[in-house]
Image (cartoon, rainbow, N blue to C red):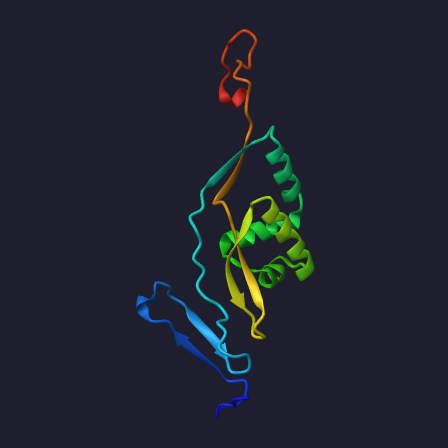
Amino acid sequence: MYSPPFGPRATCVYERPVGSGVVSTDVMSTETGLLPRRTAVEEPDRETRVVELDTAEAAELCGVLSSETATEILAELSDEPTVASEVADRVGTSLQNAHHHLGRLREADLVRVVETWYSSRGSEMKVYAPVNERLVFAATGSGENPEPDGTELPIAAR
């Protein structure tokens, strides 16, 4: 095993060449080899998702989001994509519970894996980010007039 003059746990930081297309700083540890620890996360464009309330999709999403922990995780990921251990710390839950909710959020297509980072021990860690910029639940009507006589009511009176 190679031991640099500064000790076996010395770290070095390097930056990728400017023309590589990705701006990031990788941290490498001589203890674990030359594994990148964290790279810049390039998120795909996120759009608004509109879900009609009277659908099975809405029922599934409401079931997933009925957990306060799940909604906190989704909100944290909206601020900044990150790994399960960091989101668990931010929302004050266990790593096991965070993995459970991330799995349910992925099944409901609310979050996705956007990158892989490496721990200081070389373990792969999935970086999660929300799929959508906004999630909107829309009530759909039958197209009929709400008043039997056809009289429109002011919005405040409805």
